[in-house]
Image (cartoon, rainbow, N blue to C red; front, side):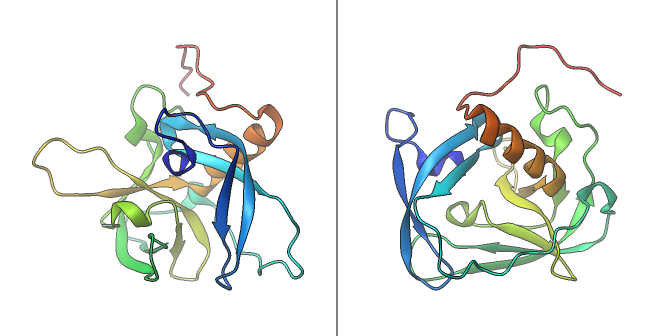
Length: 176
């Protein structure tokens, strides 16, 4: 989550601590971010002796309404979070500038704000996306949406090259 790697003035921090799956910690450097989607890319300062096992990635373009999903999270502190839900709607478009929710998978998941940014997997354990907060109308129940993994991978590659911390939009959208 982009908001986790910014200081009180909203500027990205140069270095941050990364907690690894084995509870060890290492330093990570800020590479780039897409603040509209609360997405950031970090690079670890050192190589791990043994990399963590790779996750299987799903094709988020083929997810269907009613598919079961599981959101995993690691809020501050010793606890971990685990939420189960179903897909409520697929993304309606690929462009997300006009309406952020139109490019996200909508779900029945409810993930605590501190646990957002973790993987959302399907019933086979394949990563469908990343849990992100869904802005709601005042008084509406809390909701979590999913940034599709296909969009995450596109953003990852673009941010590794551009190393930008701003949204790359000039105010023009092209729809299919």
